[in-house]
Figure 1: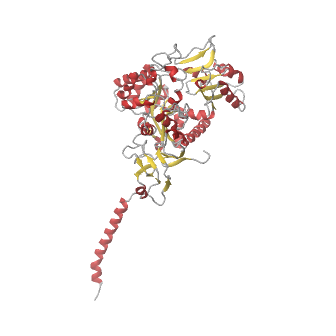
Figure 2 (figure 1 turned 45 degrees about the horizontal axis):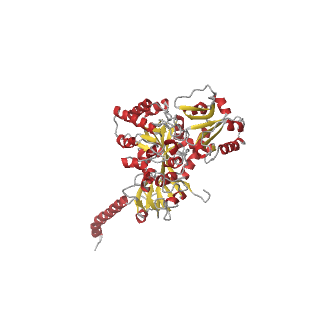
Figure 3 (figure 1 turned 180 degrees about the vertical axis):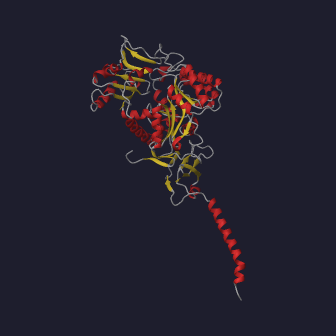
Length: 569
């Protein structure tokens, strides 16, 4: 009997079955998740995401988080080329972001004489003399970090000792807060600074009994000499910025809000990002320069440029000076200087005008204000601008907001204004701030709890190079209100502390919100950039006194490791 008819009858069925099998397999393959590029497992992951605050693993693909959850679930995403990081039970947190810092300032400081930690004027001069040994005569010597409040004599220094020790170099030494300079005779001569020099608006030349300049220049008066300093070449500036990026990564920072950059600096940041030299989420605030503001507002806000490395959508203004140099504008005079109530660096009308212009063009405004008068001036200007140009979700900011009249604390939430603060300033200032303010005004000093309870978030920062780059210093200050030596016992005005959860968000999710980045950054959440840090101990659980001993083991930006600790660092 021939089998041909049977085969012919079976063939269509076999073909159909085969086609069904192929379809099933194709559908199953289409449903199968793509392998991850990176899986971090065996970790204690604090996500800063309220929907899933704690996890043990997460996966990354194309620079973004694609899964957060358990170790076994993450393993499903492992493919032949997936890299795996076994955290060994250590802590992982989202990449930390400094919400107020000076990127170029850090770069310049790395090249300057480091005067931080000096305990006398003589020690300052000794460090500058050491630099002078390797510096040709006639060449400028720059330094930063002196603080007369840490010396036995807390009065401002006078130039005579410095001038006598360094007669052959122009010298300019910036105070730790960046709001005062000390210059020697050579520098004053080059700048034409003498007894006839008039104080500029928003600045003060400190003078002796004969009205001659002592060498100390406050706020806008600094420019009298600084404008004579040769500008670094583009190559020098770029090299210094690359060094600054390495320092930033070393301390677990993956993002920085740069508080005031010129157009030329922003151009360089963009060039570095294009060349792959940045590897940083850089939120840039345009310096208060009319030409620069006109240029950028004509273009409009720009976000997540160069694969999420540069944002240009904010303007930085200045209301007043700083407490350490008595330039912060106060409603009543300084307790230790009864004839001085500080300085307003900008006219209130200017702040209002720029704020209105920013609201019309979609830009954020972030204004430096430290004293209670400075803060009130800014809040008043913002309120007036918002009446003229009503805008929802503007996220205007006050940078520092250190000393507030208690009546002004609820105004931040009422106006939708974000207080961008630096917890480490509190622990640096607490030794002497009472002498400046007296006891009553301290009630509104570094008032984090009062502000949070009023309904606002507080993005945290360091203001580097004013303070050290290490963001865990601000984390520790936020939860303890103590210095590195655990002083004072119980904390300084401890009722204003943050919880650890708030302190973590203040360095991750809250800076993202303050920069309109919360959809892309701030937490380890599916869809966001895979920026994270591996720590050697759990900052959310160790005793407070151990937090500052924490070491950053590695830093990742977009799933790429940009720093890895070695035994020597």
